[in-house]
View (tube, rainbow, N blue to C red):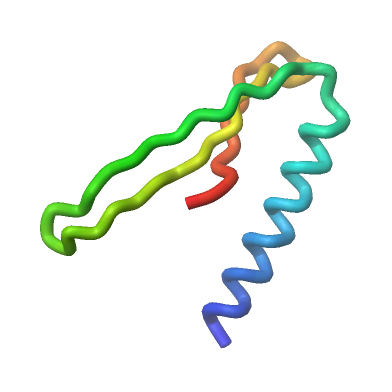
Length: 65
């Protein structure tokens, strides 16, 4: 099933991201972005984690959509 394959990949990537962020010595900022689709009249929200990695690069990980 295509949907279960995608959800399985999402759960694996989410687990790896959480484990990675637990190991780093950086603080994590969480932001949200909300918008409404014009043609569907549906609302959406994304939750993103922002942090500086060990090589001093700004990283962003989409945590939830």
